[in-house]
Amino acid sequence: AQSVSQHNHHVILSEAASLELGCNYSYGGTVNLFWYVQYPGQHLQLLLKYFSGDPLVKGIKGFEAEFIKSKFSFNLRKPSVQWSDTAEYFCAVYGNNRLAFGKGNQVVVIP
Amino acid sequence: KAGVTQTPRYLIKTRGQQVTLSCSPISGHRSVSWYQQTPGQGLQFLFEYFSETQRNKGNFPGRFSGRQFSNSRSEMNVSTLELGDSALYLCASSLTRSTDTQYFGPGTRLTVL
Image 1 (cartoon, chains in turn yellow, green):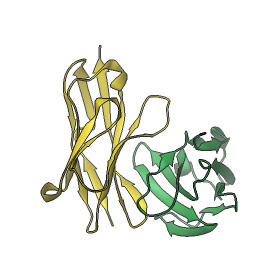
Image 2 (image 1 turned 90 degrees about the vertical axis):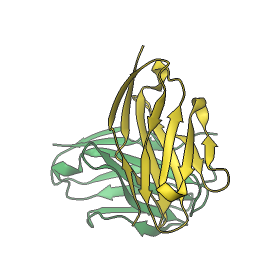
Image 3 (image 1 turned 135 degrees about the vertical axis):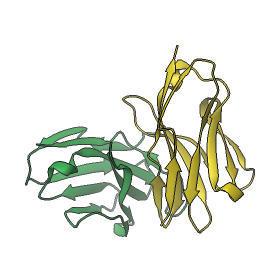
Image 4 (image 1 turned 180 degrees about the horizontal axis):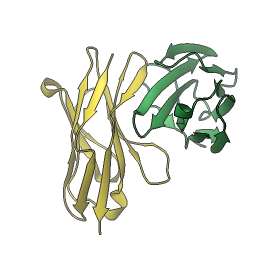
């Protein structure tokens, strides 16, 4: 069965700082990877996804992620965060007809 | 296009009762998956329905069940509720099965007293 690890569950940073969230997955088949975001009081929304092709994927709100097959990683980045990026971020891998999620990163951006 | 809708949004039940949650997928989406979200376990897959058939099931006891109707709407049922069933239950829909992107609803917050 597939699994996802996310580290640094709580991240606090100031506006304009850069953000990088790590995601490592375990799955033996063809990977399809996702980052979802859950803003306070809102539902899970898709940030970006990787199915194939260019390993550098750009998503909404200035986020990007890089798929590194040799490291089984799919790290999320944003060069300059805003207060509105305060949210919980989830990495997920699709396999065996289901999404497996990591435990999430709670990100707090201080104005 | 309207998103995934879930009803009710909040629910309070007592131990031993049963509960039914409803999910309406995005128009045209035929696959519906259910997830349980708790602070301790995070997001865990419950089951997936496609063409009115359960195609996949996560590691949950038989008290958790569901069904899908011909219009792709889905319901999940939890019988003999336990305190540990308190969670946010999320429904996600996608056009088809396999690797298609799943879009999530706002969830139903179930509290078991």
